[in-house]
Image (cartoon, rainbow, N blue to C red; front, side, top):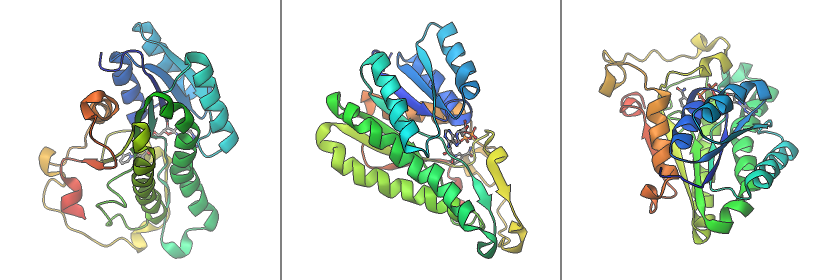
Length: 260
Ligand code: NAD
């Protein structure tokens, strides 16, 4: 029970990394505000947590919309009177395409959800985090931080690189208020993220890179699991990480060192 009495907001809590983190943090006593674009997206997760004796609520918002995120934070703090942990995790792969074919509105959509959405999620939480201190964990990626070989994923990689700069800036700004800010950079993790990827003619710009057999050294090529990532989120959210702020942690079985 590392998080007893704490309140955690998790964006994109309805699936993948967000869902696994919701269960892990709830198992350690946190009350979970499970944020999704629709109620349907997160209802099942909230039900599973409450069935296991935990506390959780559904919060509906599009993270790229300022008014909706402001309202989401109000809902949480009115319900529980505090906010200690923010897992800014929701995101999309968006359109992966050669640069000439990547339309400005496709660029905007990826940046608006992944980067502006992260900013809005944290911005409206800050007044409450500052009251007692807290932990922000942002889901970036190996793409844009240590891996640049996914040709076509330009908007995605830029949004993920931007999240790291954002985290480092606010780690310094919020340090005096005892708010820690860290970034997790997953490699290939088995989730439904590919359903949110629109690949357009990327074979035209793909550089043929030949990987040695087993492109993830630690696992002979097997992707990681959401549960493995959730354990890292728990660590960073808890007081076990009390002197860790402003840093990335890659969770990729050394994949990005091979494919940089
Ligand atoms: P996922 O598609 O299962 O989860 C993403 C969640 O974000 C979904 O529940 C989706 O509904 C939600 N979401 C998307 N846009 C939203 C919006 N505008 N407002 C609110 N919610 C929104 O995939 P995942 O793999 O769990 O992805 C989680 C994060 O992990 C993403 O930021 C992704 O970029 C990052 N990531 C994933 C991998 C991987 O291999 N799975 C690797 C690196 C980084």
